[in-house]
Image 1 (cartoon, one colour):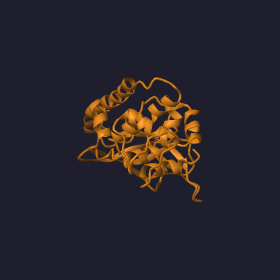
Image 2 (cartoon, one colour):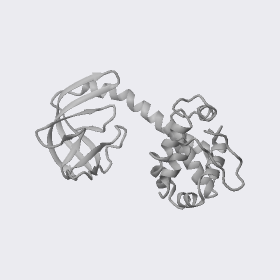
Image 3 (spheres, rainbow, N blue to C red):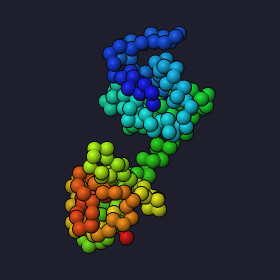
Length: 245
């Protein structure tokens, strides 16, 4: 998005300005609730940025800003500390994770710009359903790890991004373990479990790679190590999507 750096700096800058008939905001102003956050963003964003954001599909618009403006909101509005008014507002609604808070803020702003119902209750239910699903998955994860035997053949699912550093390799990115087994994964690395180690909430598997034919990427790299038949890789079942064959 054009001017995205300007938008990001908005949330961390010392100087805050107002536009048009917007009220004046104090230095380092932090909204008190969702309504206030929308009013603040509407005031502080330029018309061109609002128009560009508004005209994109909702999911695309919000996802695109997650690591830019969203990070600015999470850090600049001290959502990680969780002690101010806007944090307490979301927590009172059952939303506790800063990522969820910033996504709801951006989604609500997008809907407001498009004159659509914000449907806060509906948004909240989506995140609560996700965390409940995650909680249930975690309960079964411990048992799956315990039952997994050395020598078992597994597949690990990845997406990937080509590296622009002249190495002509592809960096693999993990799918979260909650991903559907039937998903059309871009890359499946197959291997045999040769070691498993549980450390607190981590369920680490050392895998000897036996097959990379189901990976569409050229020269894949995971955790800065080449991924190819005969080599080993370490994955965490509490994070990576591991499919037991």
